[in-house]
Length: 303
Length: 128
Image (cartoon, rainbow over all chains, first blue to last red):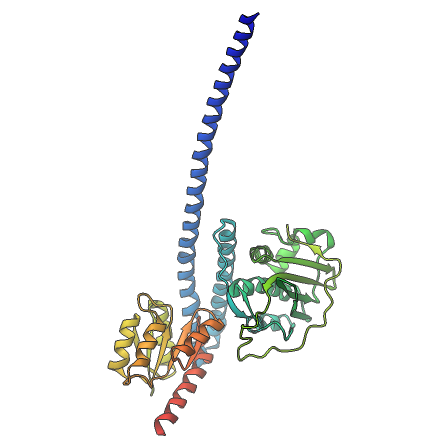
């Protein structure tokens, strides 16, 4: 009887030892795999940093020198060259925009995008953005109306990423709206620890089918093939805006009606205004609080 | 015609901005880094300095501070060129004594407006 127990114990011990060895092997394999993944991550980040420089430098030469030639052709009244050079110049800028978007997305996905927090005048950031987007809006017969609540002031945020996020939403609105109106409105909802910065981008454009709203923020998502041929684009813009928003701790909500227009609402936490914070630069806020109701039954697109 | 000292470390940007300013009739001299910028402010006595702030060892803020500290060059108006239109950059440019600041990539018409503004302000001070 004892012999059977003893044999059983011995067998169990042997099995345990073999299991232990198996676990040790797996642990070692895991360590190797982790180290490899870390090396791959670091290599990817380095690759991105290098590509970013290598792609932007020649592109900046194309854009910069075509700009110089364009100015010279305009001065000399050489209209034929002006048309051609304008094409090179705007194609260069388009390509630079795409390169920047791809690099930013890759950087976020590699976990290498960090927040650069500083005191920033939100009104000024949005005003600058509208100024930069106005030509594209005008080309589509659109008007951009900026409304900024008076109590926004200077907030601690990452100004470049905030601008980048709103730029994508604004570009999207301009692109899918013709002879319409685009409202860009910003206001503050006061909270106890944090305030919430609420930014609305509302257009009167073609809208999106409700079944497609959830897919809007996926990388390379475009409504359909006919949309691609008419509007172009890679479908990276909205994906980037949402990733930037998530990085900053915010969410984007979408409401849309086919043929009527879309409303993108960003809700982002920002620190409440401290008493010692000196508000606002020389640029005064444009208007009083936006009297826009919050988005109705928003579809959360954050996922 | 007015003489402009351009302090910019990127060769391509230096070449492009130089040519664009020369087309507008300005005499342009260039420095490739902050230290050279400070030295050329004294040796060239330009009417205005365009200072890229993101330079190598000595950045544009430091170079501006040195130029403003020297009685011989303190009156030369300086326009800081920054990568972003940030309130912090604008505050910094005021702090170190710049007359104005503008962002890169350069919008030539906007920059020309600022250059002319600074030059006429300096001319008025000189007359008084």
